Amino acid sequence: MGIQTGDYLTPARLNTRSVRARRTTTLSLTSGSVTAVPFDAEDWDNAAMFSATSSNISLPVAGLWGFAGFGAIQSNATGLRRLLVDVNSSGTFSPAVNSRPPVSGDNTHITISGSHVATAGDTLQLCAHQTSGGALNLLANAYFTVWLIES
Image (cartoon, rainbow, N blue to C red; front, side, top):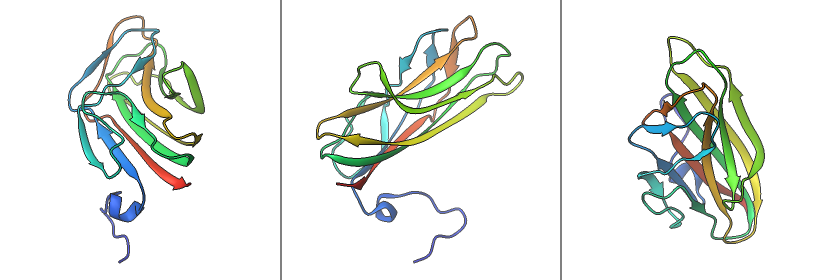
């Protein structure tokens, strides 16, 4: 089966342990604070890595794990917008950080991707950060996908 235009990333295509957690509502982000995104839905989870209303994705086996995330932050002309991945809720972020300047008059869309060499039991969190000087919303439908590349 070939991949066609409009096809989506699914567990069957990944053929490995994977999860995609999603946030269905907005999340207020305080200016200058790094906020772990608590997800409230999953599109799939074929390895019991996610629990509803959690911000943690738990990695069940040691190995090389890939991740990809997306978030949109409401329009504002000041500061920066960032997505980061926190390892083990430690405030230690993976090398993958994606910063964007703000978009005035439109939402700022941010993606992030990377990998993590994990020990069994490690956790990953998608975090959002903005520096507008006031609270801004991370909009609904932010997501975080994690998959095992090699164990």
